[in-house]
Image 1 (cartoon, helix red, strand yellow):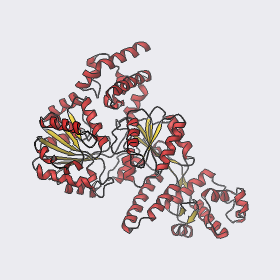
Image 2 (tube, helix red, strand yellow):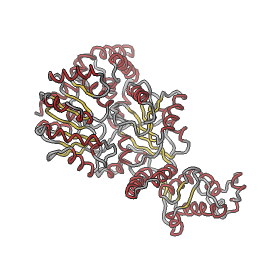
Image 3 (cartoon, one colour):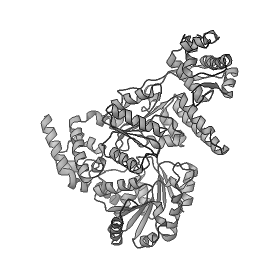
Image 4 (cartoon, helix red, strand yellow):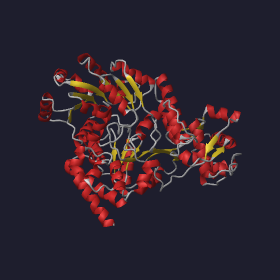
Length: 606
């Protein structure tokens, strides 16, 4: 079996070795046993059922949540010469009938359907004739109400166990708590499943958090530095997604919005343009992502604070699925924390409100930690990072200056208290800082705040440092920001901190590094050593072939495969076959054109 797996891996997919746990999962499912596999985004979950499908006769049924995801998977399989198809509402009646006729003849090895199809009259009867050998459930966390993408229709999948009692089932997901794992096993009726839990560590991703002060300028600087690369910018609101996309496009960075409020056809078109590298940036709400298998997303930016760590991890996981160095940036201010707390207070159910607040506190702890962010994420998911530093997050690469802000916190909280006591109303953070610095602005003089005992007592800090300290006090909940006018109010916790002089430490603000992009280990070395002209030439060739075939460029070859070509410069079919990601079908289809282009560029540069 092992030899067969290795040979099939190279023949069909062009890889010499497996990613962690892939071999073990393939072996268990080929042995006819149920499997629950938790692998990180980009960890190669799909191969765990695609490869076994090529080693057995019969059909592998794949339950998948989204139409776009099905088409993407089938495009990738077809490019590797693997007979696969999907049945969903995007097909015409004639197209569906043609595919079902081929299924009757046993011409496909994999069939993708949504869980809703299981309820359609006659489908299970037809399925019984198609020699089903394996059932794979992708995004299996959707079966649980405690999962972040609950889909009630996923509960229907258990009916397959009744109709196909001897067929092994493979459930796959990227993240799942213990409670969600238990739900997956229960509601999918898994039988003594072998459980495989991969590491949640994505070593090629660099995590950074930046103090948000002029968010638009920061985003523009970030994207300009990465103008030729694909990125996702997550926003909290639909309006922000629209506004950012419009402003980026006006500044020469092709971008489009994606959110649930768009017309479905426009939303689908925007997604397709992004997947096909026609635009560089998609500005999206959390509605975007689960159905995206684009491997060359080089950065994910959170323009607003996510609600919880699990959602943040899932969204950042869409960067660097090809294993190359990629960036994950969170732009954060204390005001974001206040905004989220305001939303949480609107939740009527007490238990739900307390749970949301606990999740938010964890997210705020991640944003505010001065320690290794990778270690923080792994601890959240119950995993220990074995090193003192990851060398690929902002705090490890450039340890922040941590300042004892206990006295400063006393001054800040006292100033907020005295402004309200003096005037009968509260003010925004900038005004509080002006008072502390003794700045005689028109508003300070007009309101008589230059007469307060806190006027001018804070000259030991710069304005940026006071704003950072204020943000830390917001994060801790010592002050809160009124939603509409963004004025500061002292909370009961803040009053206690003031009276008891509770210790406070804050991190000096860090500027956005315009020119620095993620680079680490082998992936970084590959990028540094590549021949830029050759890589761009191969990328253009790939795009032309993809457009002719009507598929995304990465279906032809991934960026990682193109990078390897630029390093090794294969000038024969044998050498080209040795490149990772070049299987026998792709060698036959594309080998001649790519080798010719490599020879052309190399000869020009000699």
